[in-house]
Amino acid sequence: MRKVESDAMRFTLSRLFRRNRLTDPQQAVLAALLEGWTLKSHRTLDGQKAYRLHGLNGEIIDVADGVVDGLAAAKLLQSNQKFPAATYLLTQKGHSLATRFRESAKE
Image (tube, rainbow, N blue to C red; front, side, top):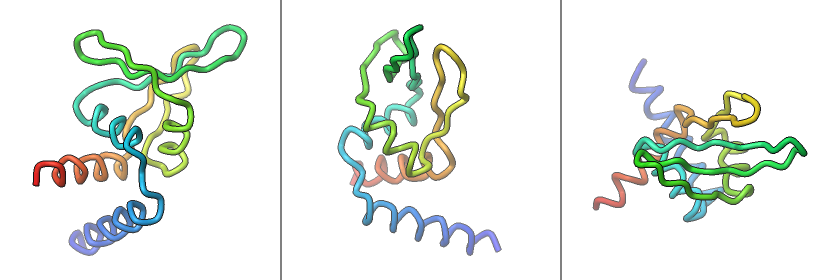
């Protein structure tokens, strides 16, 4: 039974990659999260939202709204919905896809 689930997951990820063609920035965000970076959305009191990747050594990189929105729409990220700074985590599907990108980059 486990092998069938694994095959189904590979098929789903393969179909997602072919259909949606994640952009380079989207792939970079997935890779950063896989390496331990944290993605947060910061809200100001007037409601504006900014996405930022936070590195392990204090680095901060701004991420365009469309990058995160696309990953969330593809169910590769999920949020804890906290105010004023929500944290985004890889879903199982997002983790699998990020791992696949990393492995294909090594080849």
